[in-house]
Length: 80
Image (tube, rainbow, N blue to C red; front, side):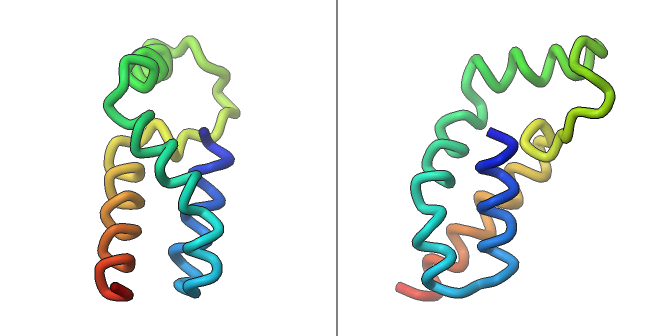
């Protein structure tokens, strides 16, 4: 999921329609993951210190993931 998050974040920063189209499936998977039981379990494990300290945590940041999904939808609505 972290790879999907990073790929989608880069596409949003790029802002090009081609880049955004290329991450549509990634954003859909991230959207399903966010708020799911799996995400909640991953977040709880992170907060409990169970996950490795060198693990990237963008996808486990509630604000980071929420902002990514919101930014993607906003760009999509502008381009519609």
